[in-house]
Each structure stands twice: as structure tokens, then as C-alpha cells.
Length: 457
Image (cartoon, rainbow, N blue to C red; front, side, top):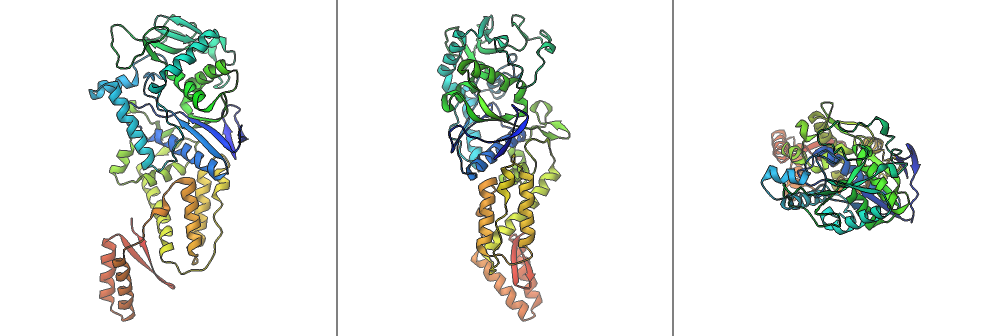
């Protein structure tokens, strides 16, 4: 199995530390609002990664965290905590916001047919672990204290800029109003932020340094270490995590353990709407509910994700989504042929796994599957050929093709009645039955082998 490694900028073979187990950490959601579809693109792509790992004979140990404290609105060390922002927006406590959107996220994982992560730990449930992590960094001399918190001193970690290819000399302090001039370097980042005496917080904890809350980056280092150990096989997230969040994770974790945090780093690229990155601040943060309100199912969304490579910038449009819906309908109408085929032709299972094992090339995998459909539509494949191919698609892409239902006994009776009417040249009756079936979303194709029914939508 080959994957593009951000760390080396090369495609590399996955070589697990303890095969057949593969340890995977994915940076999960900050639970202050509904995730937008750009977030879900990332999460679905890593669900596909887990599916391909499993199909390749490995056993994934997958951790995806839930950030329910400490993620400031700047993605750095200034601005408002996103949970506090959500609480103010909805007139609730930060704890209520965290609970609601955490449960929403987990419920959506099920509705989107995700493989269940082994662990989905929450930052607020690991405060003591994070404090202990910071204490170890302090003992090793990587921290310093200023008036708003405990900071990591990046100059003490010589390779800090390597991962993201940062030019630290170009970073200018003081260009932001909220920049703390006491920071030794602009790249230094908060491990623990102090609560402001004048601004009460819903979420704050006692610590050896004073009452406050953890920084955003320390939670991932802590939970990755707690559940998966010093070095993991794969660390994954969005491309926007590279210059700040993942760079800081590496600095913290490797300062503590003296071992590489991850052997392979995977990053998904941005999703664009009207050539702009999806962002709530731009007002283009479409949600899954927005898609469902227009009649697009979770399976349509999963197929939309698979249509583009995870390392490319994908462009979203309603026209594209409608085309994807029609594409999935073709898959559904192939799946239902297993209920009506009398064919004996055995077709080889499409070799889509091979392309997914090549850096998760899902567009090529879909192309190969559709070449298989082209072949199947010209012949009479056996039931087992249909079932094996849709089972493989479900296993690797989670499209639920095996769940597409057969028509009712009543509808099958109507199809037989229509055939009798046609045999007796009773065309008005035959046409009337066709119209009745179309009202219930069924159409009939008259073929040399007899009638074949399909879904219309």
C-alpha cells in the first residue's frame, strides 16, 4: 500500500511498526458548530483510508479526537475559544455546546456509514493527561511562562521549521493586535492559557501554573501518545494543519519522547466553492443538512468525495452534485439486477483495490468500476458476479449498494401483467401499467431477454 508522505514529500510504502496492526490518528472536529462539507470531505477520505487498510490485510487502530476546548478562533494563540463563541451564539454554556455537537458528530459518523474509530477521545476528558504532558516538557526545559500562559519555546527544538518548510526569519511579531509581545519568538505557542480574572469561563481547570485551560495543540499530542504510543504509523488531517497545528504537535511530542511522532503524514486538500475555500466566515459553509434539504443522500455525498483525489483541490457545485446523484443511480440500477438476473456469465471482480492502494486513487477506482459496468450492461452477468462487485464497492467506499432494495411483490405482479398485455397486443393496458409503475419510481426496459426494471430516481 502506497501513500504520499508530507514529511518526506514522497510516495512511500506503508510499513507498519507492529504488523498487522496499523496505528492511525486523525485530527477530528472542533465541536462548536455543525461541520461544513469541507470538514466532511476530510473525514470521509480518512474513512476510505481505514477501509483500504483493512482490505489490504492490516488491522487499523484508529483514534479520532474531539476538540471540545482550547481551539481559539485564530487557529493559534489569540482570539476567542471556539466553544465560548458557540455558547455566546446560542445562549448556552460551553459544556452544552460541546455535548450537543459532539453527539451530533458521532451520530453523523453512523449515518455516513463510517467504520467506527477505535477511540474518539474528548479533550475535556484528558485534562490531567495534558497537564502531565506539559509538566514533562517543563522539566525538559522546553517551556516558559508569560502573563497569559505557559508557552513552548520553539528555539529549543532545532527542527521545528522542517515539517512545514517554514521560514521563521520572515515571521514578524506584533503584526496582530492580540499578539503577546512577551513571546520570545512569533512561532512559540501556548501549552496552557490562563483564565482572565475579568472574564469568567465555563471551561477552566486548576493546574500547577494557575487556573486556565489547555492550548489546542497539546490535546492531540497527549491523546495520540496516550492511546497509540511514542510513534504511530499514520497521522492524518487537513492541509491547513501543516504549518501550525501539526508542526506544533511534532515539536511537543518529539520533545517529550525523543522519537518521531509519525512515520507517514497524510493531508487532504481544500474544497472550493466558487473558487473560494469553504469557510463559515465567508458564508459558504454548506452543511450535510443543506445537501439533504435538496434531496441528496449521504451515499451521494460519499460518492462525491470519492470522485476527486484527496491531494487535489476539489470544486463543489450543485451541478456536480446532481451529476453524482445520477452516477449513483446507475450503480443502484446495476445492484438491483441481482434480484432479476437469469444470466450465467461470470465476470471478474473489478480490481478497484489496486488503485486505492496506490495513494487512495479513488477517481481511478471509480473509472475501473464503471468500465466493469459497461461490460456488464452488454451481457447477462450472474447474480454472484453482481453481488461480489457491489460488495467490494461497499467494503472500500461505503456506498451501501447492497442495501438497495428489491421491488414489492405487487410491483412484480404488475410487471407480469404488463407482459401478458403485450403478448395479447393490449397496448393501452400495457402502457397504463407502465405509468402506474413510474408513479412508484419504477421504469421498465424491454430487452431481448425480457423486461428489466430500474429505479427512476
